[in-house]
Image 1 (tube, rainbow, N blue to C red):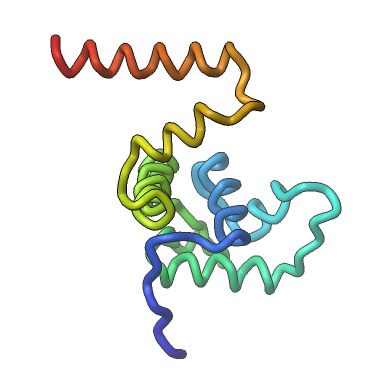
Image 2: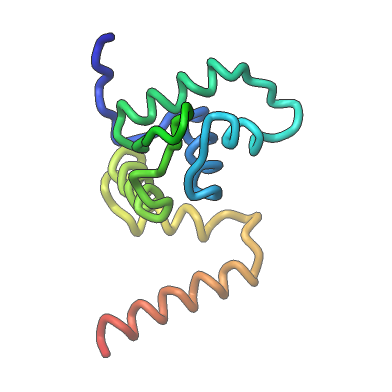
Length: 131
């Protein structure tokens, strides 16, 4: 079998599987498939292939238990979120995080409550960095 190129980011379906695996902590192919939304009917073999690809990309590891493989995330969800945002900032916002945040806070659909939460997060970060 040929070696897959290691990717820093997940495809949409890989992210769907990782999200379920992060929620479970660990699981078999069947465990992950059972967590997918109703109506998302993937064959067992498709699920196994996706998890095998995630293992080749080093996003998960597996161990054999009885006759089943148990998959475990190799990367925490928050670490992946950070990686994804840095990639987005670099590629779409010229590696300027302030531009990314400006685009977010200028969204007309953002509520005053959400803006207040963002302000509180920034204030807390500034206080921790200076105090």
